[in-house]
Length: 262
Length: 262
Image 1 (spheres, one colour):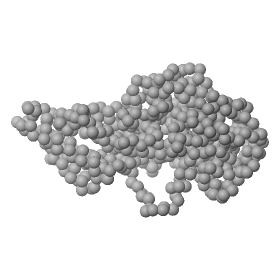
Image 2 (spheres, each protein chain N blue to C red):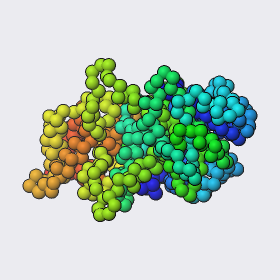
Image 3 (cartoon, chains in turn green, purple):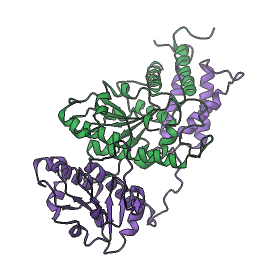
Image 4 (spheres, rainbow over the protein chains, first blue to last red):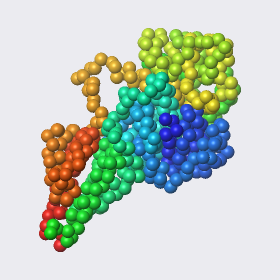
């Protein structure tokens, strides 16, 4: 399970924090670190010192340009968010996230991204809207900004607790019981769509909505954000994604000049 | 409850760690910090920088000579221990500790100490034997030494979760809370669509899919069943239902003969 969990840091400014994150991850048994557009050097004396023996995670970390690149193959992306946004999004506590992880990590193709923002400003709304859900670490209302490595530490600890809990409750032999099938995963008779599939769908959807004069990108009225929230919440399977894409293609064809029925 | 919990650091070597502990404590709503025989200056540029706005905890911290002084008034002292000792001691997981805290903190005279050892060597056997119980944060067996501030962060987080859980189970003052809040309800800023709204949507969807030649009711291929499952799973809100209905109407209009853009 733990090998299917990726920590994604976006726009980190301080090498010491990256080192602290590497140490927290390795302590809890996580190894997959992705750095999106870091605003500092990754391998420095400070990051190695704070990693305190976990600097192999700094060397193996992927450095990527965009959040898209970092979550493309993920079946669940959860963004760490300090505050509630104008457009509310499905919100989990760290414990609720932990409860869902064993189910989320079951499939061979499963990959979970936990996404953390900049030290000074967190994740942007656009980044948060790339995520299926947000996780909020409960904090003192008067002093809510956690250190980045501390935030990763808390969630990585919850990941490990979930993994240990799973080991505890695993039946000694035989097929695993599907007792705690996480919501809102469907009785998946099919694999979940990847994040890249979903992004391709949203692009196609937006083009189609423009073509049918429903959407004006100059006056977006949060339309795409609302549709993202709806479909991300539904966690479409690959088969469902194919149906939704097929509907868009049929719509485009039907609205093309000269199409009308012979 | 949180005001009855004291963090005790013994023989700390690095001012940055003391600052990190102060930040972690203040983030989680803890304020009582005791430093036993620190092996470094407490108020330094680095400790203040790492405290990141929680440096009042550094100024208000008690500095004491022995663990005895730090836990004298405590009704429960729990020592953080990385390893099992020759003499087994009552051992708690962080979660088990959290479960006990509300009860332990109930009395007016209650005071709980969470005791953390040196960065390099932890607590001595003599110090551990001053504690009622030990708490072990589960870690990767190959890399078990947590950063001091990270260890405090995990236990302080569990303290806060226990405190929040206690608030949750307090008898309700007003109308009863939504006991069985169904998942996956989003943090709805809007009412959920009614079942009748959904049925009207499915009728409209089917008509539209026929109009764009995507769906043949004579060869249904479970198409509508699959779409029902997807949208029902998402639990659409009224506002989202309006958007989805609007997209269908725009699609119908765009595919009507004679519509094409002038």
